[in-house]
Image 1 (cartoon, rainbow, N blue to C red):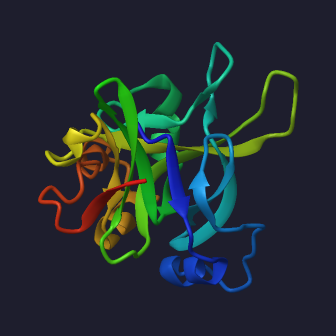
Image 2 (image 1 turned 60 degrees about the vertical axis):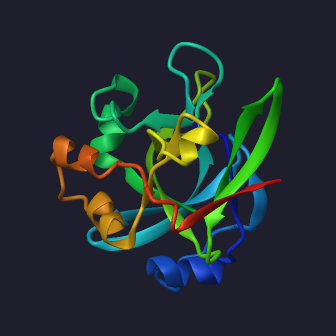
Length: 202
C-alpha cells in the first residue's frame, strides 16, 4: 500500500526532469504530504513526447463509494478495473518520498522513505478519465502501482510503491509497448540492498 507521499520539487524542476515542453503549464504547488483524492502531477507520453497533467489520486470504486488508490503490480494487467489503463494509460507519478506506518507493540510508527541524495524518483502509475454517477464532467484520475517489498522494507510494511529507474521509465511510458507480460516484469521492488533509499521515523 502507498497511502501518502511527498513532492517538494517546483514546476520548473519537474519540467526539466521529465523533458516537459516549456509551453505546458499546470496549477501546481509542492507539498510535504499528499493524501488520496488530492490533485497531483502525472507524467504520460503521447507520440513519443512527455506531457504533464494534474490528476485526482484515486479511481472511483466500481460498485461502492470510495477510491482505489493503488493497483497491485502482479495483477494489474488482468484485473477488469485496471486492464485498459494498463494498456493505454501508463504513467509516472513524481515523488521525493513516501510514507508508511509500522506496527510496534500496538501503536503505529510513521516512516518517511526517500532517496539518500534527496532527488526525485518516479512511481509507476495508471491513469484514465472518470465521471461519477451524478454526471459530473470526465476527470483524469490515477493510481499508484505497488509491489512486494524488499527485505529491509518488509520490516516496515508488506507492500511498497513500484519505483522505476530512468531507463525503465521510458519502457513503461512507451505507448507502442503492448506486451502485458513484459510490462508486468518491470514492476519489481526497487533498491533491494537498501543502498539508494533510506527510512526515517517522522
